[in-house]
Image (cartoon, rainbow, N blue to C red; front, side, top):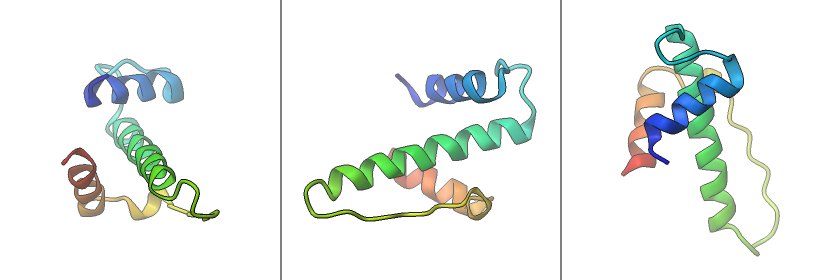
Length: 76
């Protein structure tokens, strides 16, 4: 599944909106949700069998440059 398809899936599942109908804030939130989920999965894979860790990532910190930076690091 491509990133675009995954964002569209989040828009549909979380907001009930098609990409053409979604607001900027809904698109932003869908991107942040997707990045947060992927970061959690990556952390879980890296820490598999190394004990339990608790991580908290608030969407309010994934704004502007932070969202772009995390998206770039996740894709590349």
